[in-house]
Image (tube, one colour):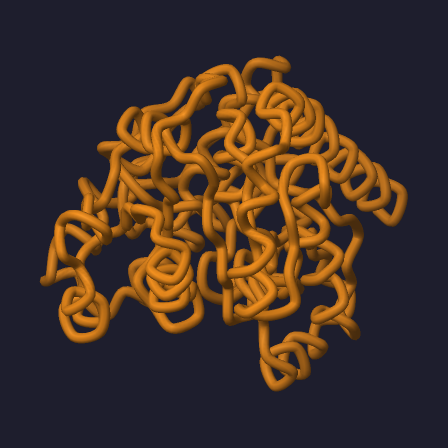
Length: 343
């Protein structure tokens, strides 16, 4: 197939450090090219890909304060693909913030499918139902439930490049929190858990106002250590060295990529039962799931008894990139064939 894959233009594809949407976009693009599909990636010009790159801008707006408003930059990147619609069998928009691609549904003769990467509100979904024919791909059953009323044509769990997440059978003696510093991610809860258990905690995320105001006062450099934002190699090393990944999520996340990444290194996870956690974690095999913080404090030490080799093998079996690519190809095929039949 001839596929236009539209990435966010906040930063490069793949991202230099964190960026789950950008990472997923890169993995899917490279997987489609490897299968012989003709893929054009609409992204920043400093992106790296084996696909044909349409570099709408030299770099992303995360790196240039003059690229404002960011929404217009995203819209013009999307428009660049729609303007070339006749060259493609399908256009796939990766909606990092919201599916602005919906506005082109009836203006573009090439079908557009959108993958959403956050948990939408009911008000957002009501607005999107103005385009009931527009196909969505959900990233979990949790997100599919929230998208009730729009045309969800498939649910495809994220994949990760399991070959590059190195298994480590014997960890060091620390817990790991990896994710953005926000209330929803639960960094303060991770600190409380580690302190109550007397286990060292490493915090790996980019410094922001929330970190400086809420988290930094707890960092002592000994029991609670701030690592900073990790690039890929540093992240893999941190995962592998951790006795467990702590995921005291407060918001209903639609997936939880760090869970799959940690498990691919053999590191079990402890998580609160929110959002899509039960779709990612096999309880008693790859981690433990708790209802609240008290349960997690008392039950966390049991996670150290899980077989790290089995954690790794289960993660590889469930979250390999090839499975994700296969499922997206099946989605594209159905949409393209249905479009041709209508014509």
